[in-house]
Image (cartoon, rainbow, N blue to C red):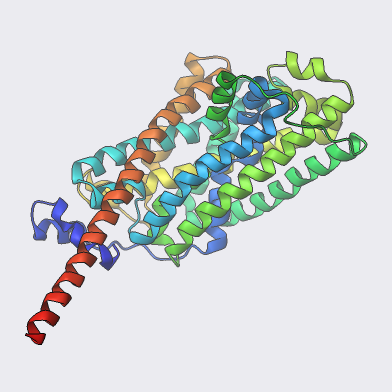
Length: 418
């Protein structure tokens, strides 16, 4: 933990307990800015977000959808600023759990840790289900089989280690950015460079509010890297990546949605957009032919693997950090070649239970995706409220400490003068 936060030891029963909880881990620093950027981008799952969350935004906002996505990005950016500041204060791995434990109380740290595990597990599993939905939509594959195609590689990367995972994230992320940008360019070309006005028909406030709930789900992948501070070569990179990836994710998704709606309008496919339960999928399939089919399959498999993997890493690091502080069994601190092997196995088990038990209960993967996303969103509210209060209280303590230093300095000067 950063030396500036020693005053936070007041949250614990004794100085001895505080120092014991600060015991150093055996993790090595190996994640560069680039590694963190693409892992975080993977947590956003740009393709799957385009085909799932953005689909829901279109259903409620239609022409206004690109603007809604930008508004969602700005809302998420507010939370991103909070996390960016906290990540600079605390260098220990564990993310939101560590922020709350040192800034608030140990009990709130425990509750925040559990809520983050709940949030990240349901959010990551939702992307497994989202992949299952796309593969089911395109090939009519059994949803359980489709989910397995994504779950097995993601779990394998998790257990193999974080560096191979980061390399996979980099390769996949670069391809995704290029293809999403290409979707916008090709769409504008297919519409003969026709541009529609997204604010010509603003939906009612109720529909805007609902649309925003889905829009904020698009650029929130930064939550997957906050627990990785201890493995970052420079812990300040966490905050920098958080802000950058929110902006990248929000803008490229907004542009892609604009292009897809634009070509749909130009080719008089308004009825297709309004009648389809998956308008983005339908428009890609109709206007892009075999290329659209490839995009959807690639999105379903590669993005599903990367998104669930990114959140699996965040979950496993939080489990590891909590077990280090004796809030979970010590077996989850076991390392193999600097990898949290037992925490990773537990994480894979949790994701598997949520995904496959959910699909066995709710047969339609799209509805299950929305339900898991909604549950994750509720937990995310608690996690971000915890982060907000963590920043407020840690900032107050820092101001008190500085005021005390200034006051003591002034008193000494007065005494020396007298």
